Length: 186
Image (cartoon, rainbow, N blue to C red):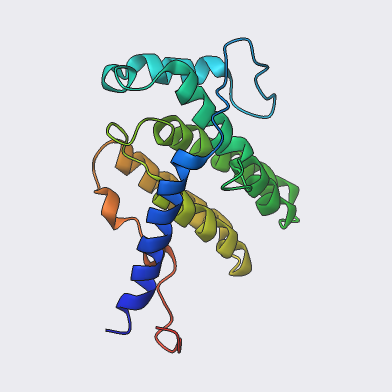
């Protein structure tokens, strides 16, 4: 029974954050808005949007692009966007060749994840829960000196989720860093 409490808290937090999305800023990215230069191109995301007929029926292009920008830049409900998380991650790595490899692989994860995550919930495969788990695991991997192995694992999981080779519910924090049996809070 004690192991259920942390899971219940995580589920409650995800529900709370998800419900707060409706309260977040309604600023929508318009075609004329400047696209942030430190993100993949707008054209990349427009291709993804245009290719998903089911999502296009329930989400406007502007809404989709707004969520892409929020993913990368953060917003009032989640200040740490993918860009900030990536910069925090590589700032802790000293080897320049490793920084280059990490940045390349993290950028790949960001492109794939954001392109799917920005869609309406009824049509996507990747949810806020996944983004949160991966972001936290990536940051924790630095403390354990396991950044590249974890980045490779997340890349594979993203590929497998998008190809429907694994189910969304297998992505848990314990998948990347199993809970310590001696932890008094479990």
